[in-house]
Length: 281
Length: 229
Ligand SMILES: Nc1ncnc2c1ncn2[C@@H]1O[C@H](COP(=O)(O)OP(=O)(O)O)[C@@H](O)[C@H]1O
Ligand SMILES: [Mg+2]
Image (cartoon, rainbow over all chains, first blue to last red; front, side, top):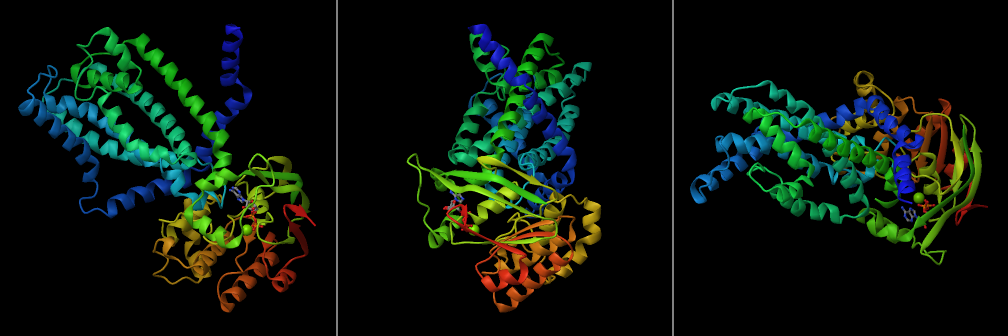
């Protein structure tokens, strides 16, 4: 009984159709790369053209949160958060978090906003949320430049463990793409998603180790926080960047497998309901 | 070559609650959908069969709510049929309709890039053709860099035509554009449709004006309540 269930789940993921869907999304990205480029470029230029300080906005968000948290934990509620300077400790987590939350916030309404395009012409719909993620990625790159500056400023010594950042970042991208595809398409059917997202993202922020570290927590609480994939990703990014610590390989593998399954499922789901967008939107 | 084999399309009526206010307001004046099924679903198309040869122009004629736009959407791969199959050879241009297939916040120029790249042009090719596209559309130089949501219906349609004509699209779906705009605009549209026909493109045209329909179509299909009469 249970075994047959497992087989069914397995066949869901490995079915021929679903693998075709996976390959299709990849082929679409290649075939429609000019469209992706145009939408992304346009989004970036407008966002920065309309504002007077332009690209600085990408840095202001994580930077201001960093300053506020440093202020709180230095003067209002003096706490020793970790052995590292608070500023860089917060900033190292705020940068990936800001990438994730910005991407989600941009992506959720993007399909609904483009009903006029969606109801008049066919193109692979994933292009729209993915272009929003690329915009958030550009912001992320800018905010990272400041991070490198902080690294020098606080005289953080680099170790080879820094290289762990890249596989962790791939995990973050997998998770961001999966969440964006899922939430933006759900928003087509239930506009509540957009309404709830601001509130949920705020809760999510506190449930992610950004202004605290999970190091000293009991194993029970740790496990609870690990239900949030960002806990693993962001905590480890900070460890390898500023604390000179590596990632536990078996943990990394487990999280990777879970994220890959989720990523895969979100694509299958998105490609399946994409055909209904025009009827409902 | 377009062939529709026994196409059925069912809508769920509760879908309507999610539709855009703009479209709902338009529909308010057009027709009220009435469920023809006890479970709150609605068959917009009930077994549509026809085929259009390359270079032909087919006219669709019928009262509001009879399913004409739905047929165009199915051919354009914008929505999928509930039942039935279709074969299409050729690249389909965006439906030319009120509002056209534009990204509302982008300027006319940016939308040329978006639509042309969806239709398979590379950025390089678009750069080469953009002046010709703008010129063909007849839009003012200063309007082309304004967000298209500020365009009038006539401007939308002119730009949509112009982009589609300059790409390799060979199937054009034209939905009730002749109903809007003044005499001058109608005449220009007619000329553009005839121009498309002459260049060997396949067309499906929906209009309520029988004279115009007869002037451009090789064949006219009458539809009522989702059935070909
Ligand atoms: N997305 C949709 N959801 C639910 N019903 C729809 C949708 N689109 C069209 N309909 C219904 O299907 C019927 C046919 O619509 P349509 O093809 O637009 O008619 P026409 O273009 O001939 O006026 C109408 O009754 C309309 O209300
Ligand atoms: Mg119609």
